[in-house]
Image (cartoon, rainbow over the protein chains, first blue to last red):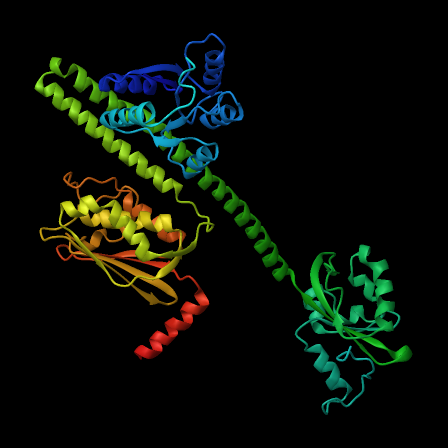
Length: 143
Length: 399
């Protein structure tokens, strides 16, 4: 089971991601937040003692109200309790500046939202295979 | 000052002229001429003084010269006269000042005045030559005003262009998300609810997906176009052969699919934004694939140095372009014909043009229908001084 915190202000994109997970029949346990600030709030509560859910991976949009993806990433990496969590930025931006900024803040991958649903399914599947299979993640036991 | 007239006397004969001849000579100077003595009294006024200031010459003789200037200049003038006699060198009067002369009917006109001292002691005289500069001042004021207007307009234009770029980026970015979602939800509809759709219904869904994709590509192209900035910051030496190799790698599958053969001569290193030149070649070779003819596609890239710039040609054996379209194909959204079998956004060549213009170059096409097309563009050399010398040497060698 791969636990994903998915942060995106666009409910359609949240749903499409969910549909792709369903389509691929992947054992993914997913929680969502609508912007960076809500994402951080969720994270804090997940990290409380007694919480039985911690994300293995965060999938985060870039352009969001209140707190955008870069500010979220910065806050996450500034906090010793959360900086180990891998983050994938899934966004419609392809601006070189955004890409550079995200990697400067130690994003694991900057990925463009695919145009086709089948491409989205491929992406979700490969993400699961890599982060839920090939990659060793810290604190897997802390659930 | 060497050319100053420190000493001199108004003596006859001058050039064989008697005193009347000298007077006549002065009368006929094209600019109004006054001679003033050490006390500031006018001893001579030429005929031109009347034309410009309205005073008959006789009326001024014996008058103080300061009656010819507006009141506000008079006290300062007194000091300047003393100053001039202390060092009577030929010079323009107050070159930094906006000098004014007072006409007989009380108007002020802008003038330039040249001064010259002659004679010595109490018989020293000052020759003042006036020039009415009203029309120059008017022209200058107009230039200044036009310049200011131009400056304002340029600033406004820059703002508008900047706003438009932001608008295009924002609009195309914000359009992208819903378009992508339309296409994806339609795909989901087909996958999950396909069974309850009639064959016609499935076709409609496919058409809608295709349209959404097409629109999405178009929007992506507009975004790409709007991103081509005007800064030279990214200009650096770029090996065209490497750029071409990257483009061919990206297009490899498409080129193989149509069994295309791409060849090139030795290509130069240019001073350019490599990413943009890559985009340009990607669009040109992509077009060659789309507009290929019945024969197997052949593309050849070559370059030569001309007038201190590299001229690069991309030649294909495709369907060619009607001469009537040669200029218009570089316009935004211009598409040749309505042949849906050749998909395209109509933005690709506009992007090419913008890239080349950003490099202060030119792009054009040489083509006839059925005879293929050669797209030609110019790019800056890496080092103008060196390349120009070698260019001249090449020409000399060729000659």
